[in-house]
Image 1: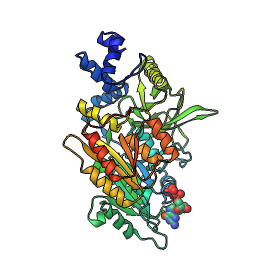
Image 2: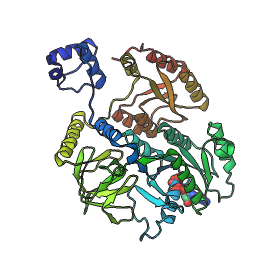
Image 3: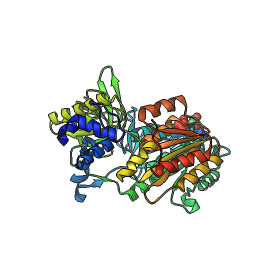
Image 4: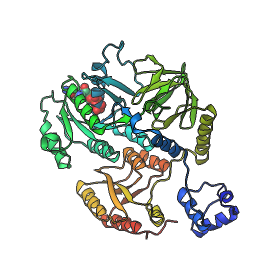
Length: 472
Ligand code: GDP
C-alpha cells in the first residue's frame, strides 16, 4: 500500500527499511514512525488520517459555544478494598431515587444517574475501583469528570489508595476525598488528612485545594454533603455538551443476553441518542432497537451524561470503546468493517507503546516530550530514591514524569495505568505477577527490572540521550 502511495516498488520500501535497521516482510503493517521515516527518504511528508481521530476532530469542530449546554458530572469512585466504595454507590443509588419517578434503580447497567436534593443531576460509574476506570482509559475513553477517593477513617492510606490517587492524577481528574466509616469506634479522620498531607495532598481544612467530606456510607451520614461537593466541583469545571447533534460517547459494559441478544451500556457524552439510529461501537454496528435506563424502563432518547442500555448491536464491544451515531447506514458498516479488518490483521494487538529502545527513534523524529514511568520497588526508600534520581534526568526536550510509584510486586493495575498513560514500568528488586506479565505482553508494555539503582538510572539516561544500544 505504501509503495503504491509513494509510487515506488515494494522492494525499494523493504530496502529502505533494512537501511534503517528494520526487517519487514511485504504483508506486514508498518508503524507510524517507520512510515514517516521511509516516506521522508523518498521526499514525502506524511499526514496520518485516523478514523478515530477524524471522529474526534469532527466533535471538536462542530460545536459552537452557543450550542453548548451544561451537562451532569460523571463520577468514578475509587479507593482501597473494603474502604466502602460499593457501600457508598449502593447508598446513593437507594437514597436518591428521582422524585416523582416510579421505581428505584433496579438494575446494574454499569452507570446510573441521580438527582440531588437541590435538583442537580450526577452520573455515577457503577463499577468501583481504579482498574475498571483505567481499563476504559486504556482504550482511549475519557469517561469521568471527577474522582471520589474513599478512605476508611478507622484504617489508613493504603497501597490501593495511593494507586487510586495516581490513576486519578494520570487522568487529570479532580479528586474529592470521602473519609468513610466515621460511625465506627476508633475512626480518626484527622489522621487520614495528615497522611494525605504527607503525600502533598492538602484538603481544604488543612488550607489546601482538595475538597473532603467525612461520611458513613453504611449509616448514610453526610452523603448529601458529599453530593453537594461533587456538584460544586462540577460547577467549577463548567461541564458542557451540545445535546443537539448525533450522539457520541463511550461503552461502559456489554454482554450477550440469551433472550435479548447483545446489550451494551453506553454513556452519551455529546449529542442525543434516539431509538432507531445507526450506531458504530468499535468494530460492531447496528440499528438501536430499544433503550433502557437504570430503572429498567424503556426510553426513546438519551442526552449528554446519560447512561443507557441499548439493544441492536451485532456484537459486544469492550468497555471504553467509543460509539458514534451515523446518519448513513453504509458509512456505519464501512467504518465498523474497516476496524474489524485492522483488528484481524493485527490480532487483537494493542497500539504500540513506548519502550526504552523506541525513545531514540522518537527523539530523532522530534515529537517526544515526556517519558512516563511507573516505579515499583521492595522498599519505600529505594522507590523514592529512584524516583528522585529519574526525575532529575529531565531535560528541556524530554521531561520524566513518574506517573505512579509504590512498594510491592508489579500488578495488572500498574500495566493498565502504563497502557492508559503510555508509560514504561521499572521494577527495583520486584517482579511482575504472572497476570501482569501476560497483560504487559498483550498490551506491548515494557517492564524492566533492576537490582541496582545505578543501573536503572544509567539505562534511562542513555535511552533519553538516544544512545541506548538496541536489543537484537
Ligand atoms: P469496597 O471493597 O471498597 O467496595 O467496600 P465495601 O463497600 O464492600 O465495604 C466493606 C465493608 O465495610 C462492608 O462490610 C461494609 O458493610 C463496611 N462499611 C462500608 N462503609 C461503612 C461505614 O460507613 N461504616 C461502617 N461501620 N462500615 C462500613
